[in-house]
Length: 253
Length: 305
Image 1 (cartoon, rainbow over the protein chains, first blue to last red):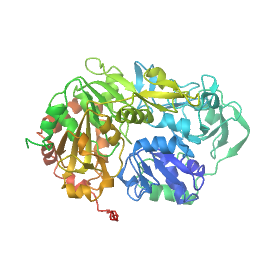
Image 2: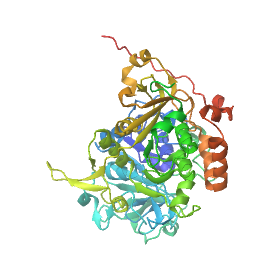
Image 3: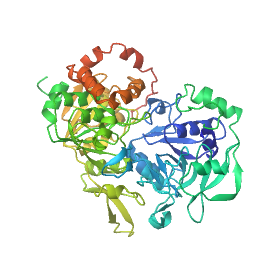
Image 4: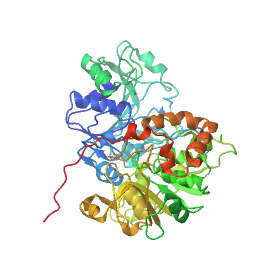
């Protein structure tokens, strides 16, 4: 997943980075095809060049050697709302048919079954980043037809599209999962199956999704991680295996 | 010291933090003043409205200790690890006594905007946000305004003006002129928004040191009520250039906070069981050597003319 996400980033882009897999993906991209990627963390580090894998989004290693450190009012007003962010990474406990994300509650808001952490910066990243990439593992409970609570808006909310709602960014263009990649349909805004990992069928992906998944007429084949990508991920970027849990076949990375 | 702003943590909390106050202990991952939170727990403050972007472990501890009536926040997790379990028990109705913690929830941008409005003494702050989300339904204080120039409908959040804001920093002088570097979070806005400000520092320095590098001053002495000198006061959070974040502690908190009895034993030993931060550090003699920061000095600049 980290390698697939890294390939989505273009050299020179400005990326709003989250912790975990997105952070790995961004640093992998920087070490391979996108050396001029600018990493911005919501904590205020701009152009960060972390010498160790940050455990939290406010790790001191993000400050040391970065291009700029600013307060959070500047992060959200001068960078994000200003339109400087090309790509934002998002994840969550639930992702639905239109790429709406829930990181707030499972169940009713007033008396939740599971209380999740909440938005953090995700709601505004979903609104403002020029495009967002969602990274999440497939599971029918994690991919319901409708999320219990919309924390971060996707392509369509309550039947209304992003432009109608006044959102500047294009929203989630892809959902990168552990079995394949979904893409937002340009007309309907629905997340449709676009590409598969090696050895995975469209039915395998459908099993992890709680709505009848539309499939592109021709599904793309995602190349497995290269030897270079694997070496960088395992030996350089996450040598302790903090975020890369499965090392068996490389597919879940 | 009886005179001036420099005083012990015990005295600063006794004088400036009252039952029922809105209390902000800010710091985004960096410079979170655990020492102040612990002293508030020790002095058994009650009915506090605790506000912070990320409640972090410190508010989880204060919720578990019974200090909080209400929590105002935008991301309530254990960064990079998982959940804040005292917080979750309170909201999922699993606390002894049934919870009863009131919440008021925003996003980070929303909280930043609330502090910006408070600091500028404006009633609200506009932001282009919250379209398509359920947050305004969950929190009716997120509203909107029509721009008088363009007609655009913008979201608004109300000003947040705390009774007291507590800021940890690397250094200050006796007048409270406070310098910090590394991640700055919303400490400046939170301090200017607040009625009272307690600054807690790693080092007290001469005014000359402050004047040698004025661009690094984030909080001016004129808004500071008290200066507390408490080295390691941010642990397990960190102070850039002084000590690293104690990630092991954050990972271990998952197990501690998941079990109410273990959490109570933690508070008994490390909060109620010590008189102050020096006592807390004395209980953990290996901490300082493990976390002490390596030198990475800036090149300095010329302020001459």
